[in-house]
Length: 416
Image (tube, rainbow, N blue to C red; front, side, top):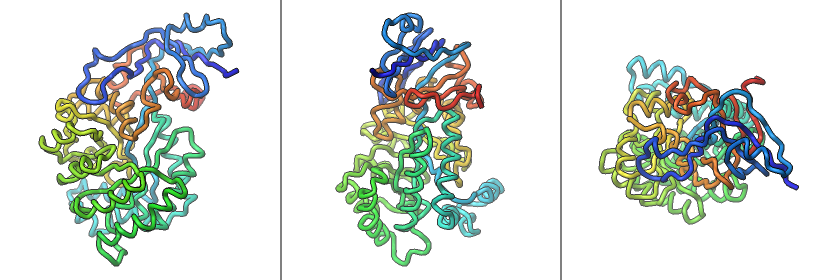
């Protein structure tokens, strides 16, 4: 007989269910369960209802009773991070804030290539240790699913080292790590050919190994003047699609062309979009591509935010992710960044929460999480409050006190 656990009572449960994937959402559309309990069995949600009523069920239910007022949300989903890396880029940050340009920093030995150099020096075990530490930090902040990219190896062997480190970390942490191959991050400085030759080599030699070892089902590329053009990336994505990989794109960060590539190749998501104009916004909104805002990069670089309000008003699907990386987005705090984006882009609480729950799940092509609903993974988080509005009101300074993953309590602030 399967063990059924009743968890609660929660003063409020915000299930994030019954909401549209695309377009604007008002707070009045949020369903709120009061004095509720969540029934869990085999890591899945069975039912949400009145705690007292559920506790009186005659069948064999184990009760995990909570003291005090708590509000419950689905586990947060960070759909774009780079938390597997070596070294630090604190010097970049200081130079950038002192007025140096991206190119000047790169010439001074900084930039992505600096992290590539330091990641290549790191052993697989060192990468596992760093990624584990950061994944656990995300978990304590309520993030139960974390996308993690390679892209600091930029050779067959070094990309494999990163993706194997991510896989090994995933086996040993409570959060789920969703890996993505970003071998097309930039042309490696030590590569003797051009962009086209590099992409051909990666797609011919690395892609089959990714399939054989089941290291990822996602291929990403940075489409930008400093990385790869729309024309250069087309054969690469064609090969990826032919092998059955999902596509995602670093798009429109500094210049626009990436979002159109994302649409043309039916990418799951187009991420960044800080440079997107109304033209790109409208194209994305009329497609099935999830637009992912990365406020951490805007805060880290001191540049404009993704036009999130325009994307929603045009009818687009908006996810929000941290872009946690050592260069442009070192903060790595999803809840803080989402709250700040909401302030600057005038997003409703419902839109912000959708962006870091079920819409973020869609950006990873995951259909089993992001909502507290029957049949979904029992990933949810509890906050010490009787009013869900307090969560974003505190702009990231109010963290969850409890985190459940697949129905198991994996973090309890009271015991740490």
